Amino acid sequence: MDASSGSATVGPVYEAELGFANQLADEAAEIGMHYFRGSFEVRRKADATPVTQADLEIEAMIRTSIAGRFPQDAVLGEEQGQVGEAERVWVVDPVDGTKNFAAGIQVWATLIALVVGGDPVLGVVGAPALRERYAAARGAGATMDGETISVSATSTLPDATICSSGAKDWLSGPRADAYRRIAEASYRTRAFGDFWGHMLVARGSCEAMLEPSLRTWDWAALKVIVEEAGGRMTSLEGGPMTDHGSALTTNGLVHDELVARLR
Image 1 (cartoon, rainbow, N blue to C red):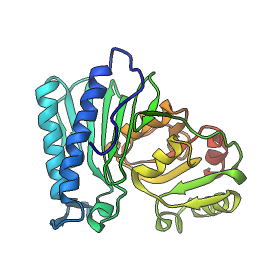
Image 2: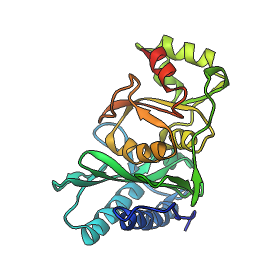
Image 3: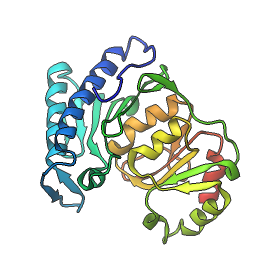
Image 4: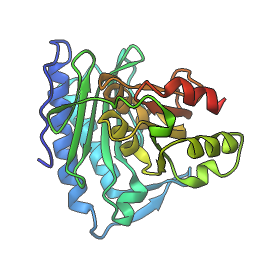
């Protein structure tokens, strides 16, 4: 396995599911690393985003495994949409960061979440090329490689490191001036993108991560991990997370100030 899939003590409700999700991440890592930095076709989907054989094989594997273990559950995945209707929905991004994957950049991961009644209750992020595994279940805390993680105690923007998606997202549009002022007020800014910026917040390495638009499979697993690590994840306006909506992940201490500045 690329990184320890151990977790904090988990309540009896989701202990089996968390172990299962980590097993899925192990198998996804084997598939992904088989293709990573190798020779494979990269195609463009209808929405112009890339897809590789790794994306397709990982999602197919996860769907087959869920059908065998939890046949009553529904599955929502980036490549094949939602299959089934149930209160429990597994949400899967087989390769978050496909552009990085295709370019040979290590920042990509398989994201696996369990959503119950519309609320994400379990999240696993497997990033084998980084040799990192993040996991969390509601009420059980968050881990990285089996060790408990928590957000930072930094409470002021001048001391905060702010992550965001690429600069192109913030150079124009209604939030351009607000982002520039945030960048000027903060200690430093970095553009790590995709899942990793959110996980850097969860483990206390950064104070905030901003993204203008995410799909449900991009954020469901991250939200559980961030919140179990003591952080907050909302839209940029401070509202609930939605499909195609924006995302603001913070350590909680700088959240309200960033929301106010972005407004």
